[in-house]
Length: 338
Image (cartoon, rainbow, N blue to C red; front, top):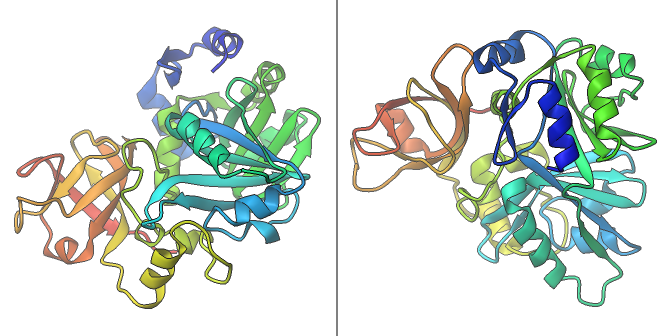
């Protein structure tokens, strides 16, 4: 996050800790607003890697789990990058803007992932660029989100996972009520001010809760290399193509789909106690060994914490699961289905 962007957010009342916008003065009210009205959020937990060049599509198609070659211009798709063992190193929202591709990912993974991608470029005509500071991401959510975009003079994409470019950035539609604006750093302050006229500012946690509610996991430093894509429901998000050629981990991912049985699945979780990404989940039936892990967590508008967790289904059926430690706080789970 650039110093200018921090200063602009500060004038709006933002409280910032380690580049995270925690809130704008009333975290509880902002969470309530996320569930009931239209909010605008600096997505300081995300970063952007730009992949460009005449062979960018082929390069990404050969590295990621999704079908990048058939991603239309001004469209987006969920995707992942796996280790040779089929475990996700990172999850992405891939956005095609003209000939270039923007990879959104957890900001804490960005430097390492950008370096690792660069290692595979070799002689390909591809440029990998860390956009930290060069682009800012703003989230907009609520029943009046589309109207807020129009009021701010921004384009409204046609539908889910489509994108509309404008002079200094691109608007991405995640679903009918959630949008992202990826904008050049020097243009972000003006876009932010225009959106503030139509939406309430909220901290990053509010957006994370919305993502949990939508059932979209984000791989971070705490959860990298923990899950194959199917455990996190990525095939249901369209993030995995089973009709393309080889990519890192493809054999494991395909074998899991066609020959194996996925024993861990994605669940929405709730606990009265705090939860965090990477927290283990335990069953009293086998307290010596975790039966799951929290992928993402955030305070819930109605109290307690909500999360997305990947858990062995047999232990879920037994009930009475605990988070963070054997004998820890109770956690209730509901399977994510689409």
